[in-house]
Length: 151
Ligand code: AMP
Image (tube, rainbow, N blue to C red; front, side, top):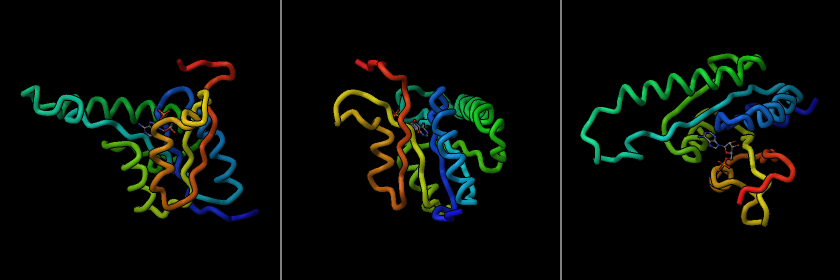
């Protein structure tokens, strides 16, 4: 048993690809006897609507938060990821994932990457953002179906 990693962080966008990303991370965490946390970030509504709409967006943000927590639990519960290790945070994905990793001594971040054509499209924008600036290892798990075109 290697114990190369102590805390594995799985970042998921809550699409069906999330299962594949989590399923790749789980055996790595198990082999290393590592803690596993899972995170989803929600874009703040204020970013999308700025000050253009004169209304309080708090309750809508809370509803989105609750919905994301529920969806995250649907993905993580069947794999016995404890609720206390399931995190929904508001902010930009790469910034929040780096912040969580730094604050919680994460030494491996696992993200999905789409098999788009061409080297520049090898990683999705979020996975590229996570890779750049990460202070620990990052594993990009290939997601998306073979033969799928994104154009
Ligand atoms: P994308 O850049 O949309 O192709 O996403 C690539 C990967 O980045 C996903 O498979 C997730 O691992 C991660 N990711 C994307 N959006 C989020 C999000 N809102 N919260 C956490 N991780 C995300």
